[in-house]
Image 1: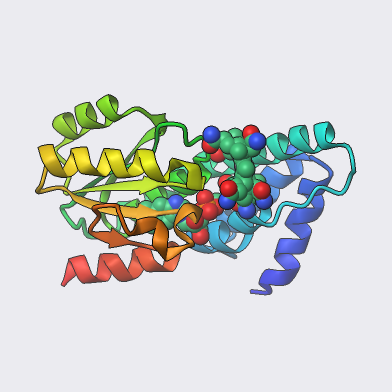
Image 2: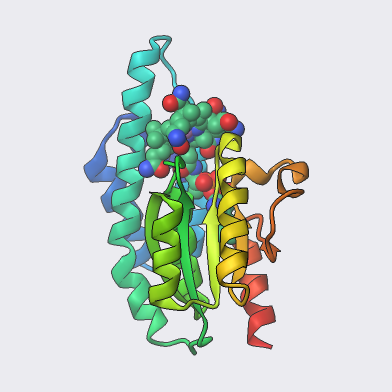
Length: 216
Ligand code: B12
């Protein structure tokens, strides 16, 4: 598969804010088995947001353009769910539950949703509980789900402090639950120095490596 050509085609629809063609094109790649879910997320969807460039000078226009693109990508991710279930039925469960979320004040959630899907595909029983999740709701979810892992996705470095507080609380009340961190806020290793965590997974590939270790 020529990822570059496929990405450029996809980007040409996105640049026109053509939701219909963007969604149909992405889903046709899954339908025709030209791309796996992992490839779709990694090669097309994630870069189309991470490398989003606004080609107009007006900042107000750029804001709605970014929002429109995010909304298109979100639709594709949600529409991929039936493909995920289909594949999940064919793989062996790891018998490990993971709760995925973004902490208070963190609105960037596309990475977290993708991570929850990719964890499902690796055999985890993964549940995404939302963005901007307050500490008390996290504690309540952990009580309800009794997961083996909690995965926190953090993008904005300003949210490192609140992440640290949440992790302290989790370790205090649920020392048995392992904490997984991921997201752009941890590009700088120093960001993690004061946080109590068990695993840091940098990208989608790291999820597979991690699942392989759990499977052993
Ligand atoms: C879309 C977007 C938004 C949307 C988010 C909508 C939504 N529903 O998610 C909205 C409009 C809300 C938004 C708001 C803001 N944003 Co914004 N946003 C983006 C944008 C364009 C894309 C983010 C995205 O979805 N990327 C795609 C996903 C797949 O990437 P990802 O999350 O990094 O995930 C990857 C890895 O990090 C990893 N990963 C992520 N989480 C996890 C978790 C685990 C467990 C694992 C294993 C892996 C993992 O897996 C993915 C694959 O590699 C980025 C640009 C960029 N460079 O990313 C800016 C960006 C992140 N935003 C930025 C900023 C500054 C803001 C605002 C502060 C703007 C403002 N002034 O209001 C607010 C903050 C809101 C808040 N309180 O959180 C900056 C952050 C700069 C910084 N480092 O501080 C960026 C980088 C833009 C820029 N170049 O300046 N944003």
